Image 1 (cartoon, one colour):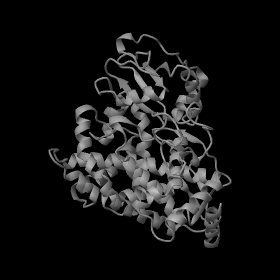
Image 2 (cartoon, helix red, strand yellow):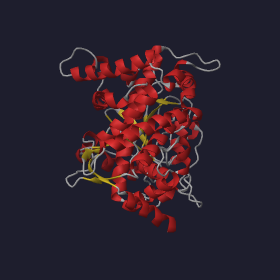
Image 3 (tube, helix red, strand yellow):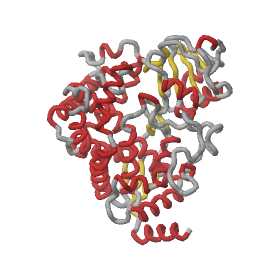
Image 4 (cartoon, helix red, strand yellow):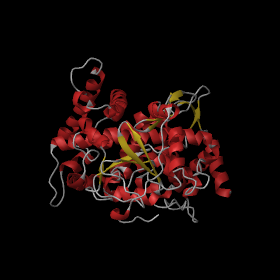
Length: 466
């Protein structure tokens, strides 16, 4: 669907109206996917719909071309929504909260820390964290997989980003991050950001959680010799160096965004692999053929095509960033529509990545859809249009840590999957909770089963002769 000039855009998309039943899907976050499916049905024929909620004129965009148009528009036409700006009360002036020229400068300052040549060092930290998890697990052990993956990713980010033993700080930091994530929806309460850290009864838990994270990030900004921190401290060319306060803001953002999203992705990956044992077997066989008994490296990631496909398919079905918000700041036309200035734009990754127009058998877990004719992983292999798959966003605000998260997910699976087969606990109740990220509402209780060496070798032989 092609866009037209803003002065000729006059049509209005269909309206979605809330009733008491539908409102439950707003306030009961376990019902949000159902509500969004209804909104998607309303928006799909014309690529957009709108509704009014809590006084906001809100537009939902479901056409991939229009989504990319919104995400790549100049900041004086489309800006980050007020929700992102409110995150600044927790995260300061970071990549997640800034926009326009300030954001462009900060991204230039941050980019050297995520260049390809640094990934070898980060990959070593990820592998070490995954190995510690692998040797700590025991056959028959019941685990809360969301907690196990949170500890693993905290360990990896602690080593690579903060220069500390991430597993030692994981319990306290993980709890503080969980509480901070719980507080994020409170930012929708008018003026909550103004009172969040005041001495108000009932909010002590929030102040304590933030103080712990702030102290950790500030200590790393001032004293850590971790490679990523060094890269942030020392800018390149004509870009000014980040101050200690600015490094602190970015480290706190990396802690919150990088730790939470990757841990959630890996948790859902284990659940999906348990539901699809053939895919798990194929992945283990590939890891055995490519890696064998040695530690995987950054260079192995590209060779692990099916393992990458498992990650991609998990991100398609359970995108941590399940919805993206923007606001109309200027003269914007989206196809025949012209949302007014100040309108909130919602770009539902959840719907785009499950739309039957772009995806064959969209509800099914099919990692093989990501393999090209040569069996290599390719993001374009499913044939979806640009904008229909964007787990890390797009445009100038695309996630700067996407490559770190991708490598972390692939290498963690490459370490753990050959030795362990987690199985969902019989009493598990797997329900999505759509809050800031898509988390399992009641956790992910699983039981660990060791993969016998003889069985693993047989699986590899079977795949080799198939």
